[in-house]
Length: 293
Image 1 (cartoon, rainbow, N blue to C red):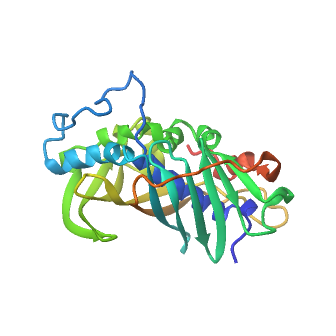
Image 2 (image 1 turned 180 degrees about the horizontal axis):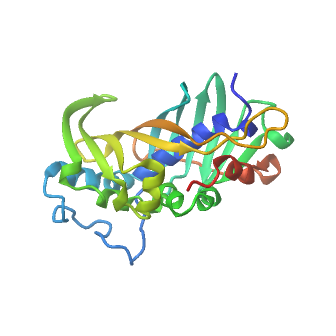
């Protein structure tokens, strides 16, 4: 039986899925002080992007975001200390700003989930939400800020164009054709140089030097499936038992996130629950997530 959201396990899984998904698909404007092509400008002439596969991968984020919305299915498998938990979700997502409405299921538990302006709302099974209210919320921006600059880089969909610019020809391998949901696609394996991302030095401490992922692109260059494999340092946890004063050391945690997109342009209605029905769990989320060195 999964613990309640206050215990953090299901909540952490669904947060991980949303973050891993929106950061790699959303393609907002990073501001005028960042080098790189403006939205709508061609990428084939970009340095390190001579091969067609590299050009396709670099432009995929923008082409996908131009569709505005899509239906999405999500699978997140989190493994640590010899055990693993899988969460599955389905819903609709705004491909530009990351707003979404989803249902997430893990370990037999079903959670209704919404992300509005980078605030996560979750409605766990009846009786499991703290505070006597049906919904909890976690401000993802505040959590990212507590994780340091690196956390902000990975969790802000508006900065994901930088990920495309961190890819060059040696990082992209054409893995052949495949059919996704009845749609013909080309699969590319991509190794992202983490050091080239904004705040890459900090991110490298959390994720290591490389971020492996696979993307399947349709004939219009849009992402139909995306698989991201991350290995992160889980924060230290307090030891249990009377008189325990020390904490266990950080543990390595692997997270595989697979998203599939379909029905581009579908209608999305994403509204925050009434404030009287919501308990703010942002501080608890920050404490559980810790500050990674």
